[in-house]
Length: 281
Image (cartoon, rainbow, N blue to C red; front, side, top):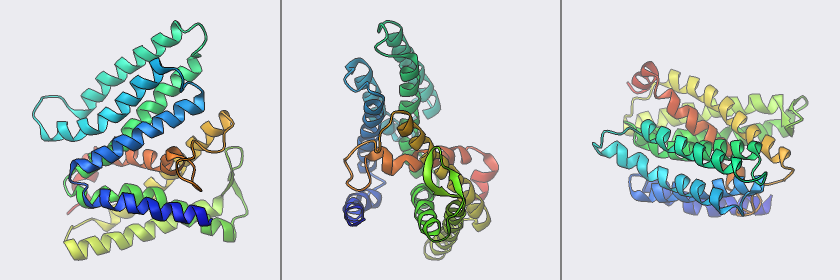
């Protein structure tokens, strides 16, 4: 636990300046780096990290896309983020599956499919933080991704330790409990409410507290699913952690697995007209 806390504090020394200068290219650089590391960890987990014909294109895509998000949002090139994502994803699909066909069994179709899915998921998830920052009032809203990803985990842990009796999904994550899950939801709702009140009072942001609470429940559930998906893959490949970059936490994917899921759904929520127009008065 001591190592875990020290790592978290050191991590804050890196993350806080990035968040402070989130309106600059520093955010994209940071997102690009952790996206590349996340993709590498997953491909290594699958056992294909020495296959440079697969590793390098996936890492290039994951590092390149976060910069495209802001460039496209600020330019008039006539290409949307979604259109670029489709173009690159189709290209990457053909490359990975084509290599699988001619690999003589060195890249099984199961591994090829998972590599493609996880590369897209990691890239879109991390890049979604940049997309959220670029929204109207994004300086307040994008932080909700991190809150919804990490706060429920903390609440679920303490409630689960104190009151946990019924296992949630023991085959995937033996330590998670139903009581802990409810504790995570309640904790996130509480923090979202406090955050909304503070931001509205200090910055006159006008965030709709009812929609914020609804969003907190949705994103908390998604956060737990993201964590369980990452755990499912680790169990499939029989590893404890994705990496050792963050002592006490594991790798980038061990720390940011929930962030990816929350980020994806958060950006989808803001594609819904009523929600996007109503969350800010």
